[in-house]
Length: 251
Ligand code: 13P
Image (cartoon, rainbow, N blue to C red):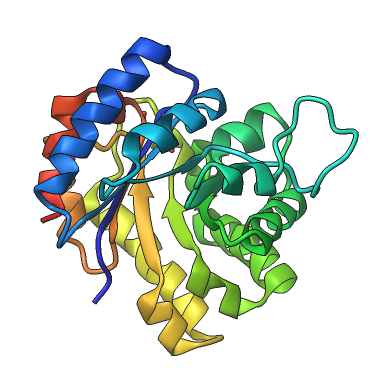
């Protein structure tokens, strides 16, 4: 059985006071479901030290939203995997569509970041997903295949045993326009079948989260789908009541 994972991607939001309040609220909620649902938060990088202090001795895991593909050196403004390890990061998001679209991250770069995270025992949450144009052109599965293949070719299919995949259709992110459970399930099932061509056991055990306008009122229907193993939640993860409703929907 795949344990559901609900991860909050806070993106570039909040301040120290709101971060503390949200961490306390989420850790209290997570205690009540700790046996059955895994909960994680992904705050902005500067709040990771505060997060590690505040969430120590709770069931909530934490991580970062990005990392450098390099181990160290003259890369002004970048954060290395080993630095995230210093602060107990369990996860790091790689290949989020905002980084692909706004910062030009290619499949090759995302594969290098994925490997850099795993080299320091951090689980990448690998984001894949198509734009609206790509969906309209009927190339959704081709795009997702290329995004996944880049990682498999670089790190091997075995690497997916220590990673999470997040299917996030770009047109559903921050738009309030969620993929229907059937639309999401179709892509999730495809991803699993594609991995199964390499290794059926790994395909069956890897968690595939859905992301894109997940809210308290649509989470249950999404999580009821056979191949949806939880959510990568943006906007709704900043509201502790809404995030709590999403966690409950994964029970
Ligand atoms: P929203 O939940 O705000 O649509 O964001 C989804 C997302 O990008 C999570 O990584």
